[in-house]
Image (cartoon, rainbow, N blue to C red):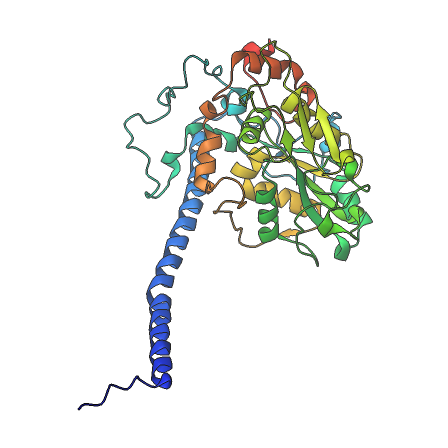
Length: 416
């Protein structure tokens, strides 16, 4: 009678399991990981090539008769005091740029918004290639994939607002020792604060410090929180040591973004965003809970438009050093905009500029760099879903001085 088979010793089982794990790890390191790395490099290269394509387009625009820049300074300084004599040799940012007439910038809206009854026709743009094949995310993006309006954004001068364009940067650097200087972002929800923070962190070399996540009082909070409130991660920090980089975004596209991700903003959801008015033509009020406590709540009877106007206009009246930039300049003039903000705080731009290719935040949309360039470069996206009565309400409520300061424009029929 044969003896029953003896089970293999535990030692052999352990050795066999270890060999299997080792083989799987070896396959991952030699096959899977290199393929993933090559894919990431190819995606990043595509982003850089697309941005380089924008610059090439600018050169061709200049060669084919773009009007000369009437103001040789590279910066349009959004400040009420615009004495041209004050700008001689005192502007810390002087770099020649291509300039075009305002009508060539999509913020000035060369055509009226689409009628609610007739959705925008994607083939209505005379500059678009109607014979182009359908867009494929797997194809390598290039300048031809992006609407011509995006390229025109690059030809506009960067807009920066400061308390005093002649002394803001120098006074900050003179009053704060190099080892204490910090630069950090501030801005309403959905204005690109994460994008700017990552760009500064990668490319702005400060004397001794790394770029913090936000200003000490919380990046989304109103400016009057400064010195009165500290974010949980910022307790013990000195607000005066920070140069805030405040980001403003076109009010129309900002409302569109808030409709998608409202964050701490609350309004009656029965009004489909971007519906700004009720059936009786009264405004849809909005409450923004900047802090959970009641003292941190702000109510805006005229809704999101009033919230945008109040939050940003309060910053323009601040007297301490800060730099206020447009979200659109961060998108289409990344290197130049980061350089201006960084040098104002006493930092130095890294030798090789690193662009942001992946989504800047994990809790929002999953759009990559090329997707975002396409989205904000196409003016038909700006008024998608807007009713005529809501656009009329926006034109009556929005802060006109703020719109003019940052060169945002509404269609002529709304402002005439």
